[in-house]
Length: 423
Image (cartoon, rainbow, N blue to C red):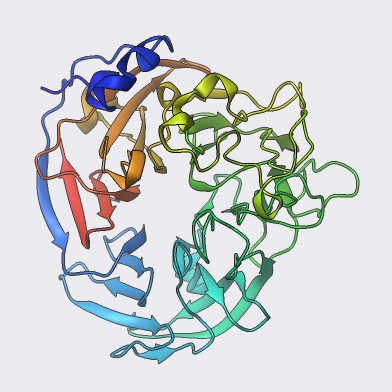
């Protein structure tokens, strides 16, 4: 049994600061898990989506889209620039940094229309953009065709000589999921651009809610003057979105800066409260106009003086911002994916939220790679308890968590594997 505490997540010198945050107690892990490695030797697997018979579509960030049949046979469907062995190619698609072929979603009416949707970076417009592509899968599941780019203008971060943080492709968002309302939700990142998250017209740092043709869904609630596709705004870098199994309410998992990964329950037209522009809340100028790591943006351990950090959710500037229901005990460790466990097979964890944490510490040290199981209140609006899964395999950078039609939890890790976890 593993019970996680802040002292396991930080250098000893930082323990007292972490404990002062009022950490949420972690309950005992009551579920034993069995692991099967479904696929290995992959190149940064990023996301998965299932048909009812267990057919699994999956993406590799710098390779492309593939499908694994229930028999275990794998067919490479759509390759990116410079790849080999795919049934089809798209020369405009490329990967760089965090950007590439990311999220995958299957149309709820797949049996009738054969549609899948992929979020990927494209060179069709300069200096590049992220796109949501709709593809039609062949009847034999061996090819895709009829590409339609239903969203073409999601910002992408190009090379910047002035920006000291990250590289090209950073803060790229990339998760796509159909909600129980039948609309497609798309998460986007702020691309290290201070103007993007609160912008009414730039659709980075947002959650989009669209139909299968890319049109704005009714009831998005975006403020006047905003792109009507916007469901929520003021976000930093969302890589996880899922839906409460009873209410259908969307819930996101979002990367923090040097503190505070966040889980937030979304409301139509809501503001996430992230605003890294200079001269907001008394800030001065910042490198390349981005204050997202203020203060002491490059001053080593001083970054852990959290009390003076720019907040992830700035309620002083935006009193009506959506409050997070959990902030990872004030740590930034790369919270990526989110999913709900459902079914009697999960016992006490039935209906609990799970989030994948990639484990990012000071200087890039992998600290805290894990899956957390989060018990929510009956209304889904607050966190009751957090339990770390005791994993039957070596943890990794958990990029995607998806419950399959068999009731098992599938976990993709950047190290090149997709695991099947069963209780």
